[in-house]
Length: 337
Image (tube, rainbow, N blue to C red; front, side, top):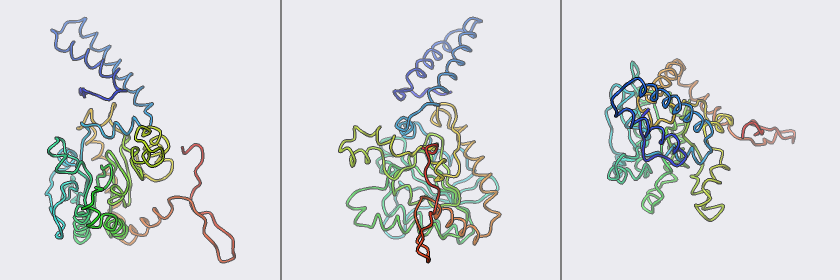
């Protein structure tokens, strides 16, 4: 249990208990204080479980964006044994919003590709707040081809509000390169695991989001557009972002029911930002288990199943030769939303 002050607005009861605990822990310990500490810790657990068990979609977005939430580089430091960063796209430059490199996870040698937001303002500015440019996706594709060449599984950490929307990025082919990246990932003959660790916004997330297993952390979100972007289009004001978040159905609960994600990785009580070590341990456990199952499959089988996986998403009608229509996919029911 770590202090995260200043916290989120809905966390006020939790932070008040933490403040009382901090005050008691600073006092000389006696029997009465020890009992008060035990009671407060029980109260903290009950309050946190109650609040986080009832988060609405907009509150989930706030947790996914928490300033103390672990980023890709944090997981590389905590869960992996080694990491050798690879730079540049051999075309334009090195995009610091996209982190790539060789890594070792116990006995597995892998290629890691992930968004990086940066912790300080200086780092965030250099990383474009996690919004990758075309050179970032070209860098990712180059390293993923390298992974395929040497038979290394690919692990993608998704954490971006969206691809960089600037004029320069558009001039250098932002939408085209994202499409190329998705097409490449659909055909790579090596295992691919994609995990949404925070924000999974728009094409910026999809650009490294095609894999054999798609997972997300419990309080992450994965969406075709950010809540603010959706609100700006539909309601002409970002003030309706909470309404947009409710309508988009992009939380782990919604997406697991809809079959968009395969697995949801449970976060520590109170969110990943409260305990980086425990979250990294859970992530590592999931990766090891999933790598163990995927590495036993042939490359041809991986590509075939990957195609079938994404082909089955959504619902549509297919015209048959006899003129009848066949419904493809699973219709959305009330229990899914």
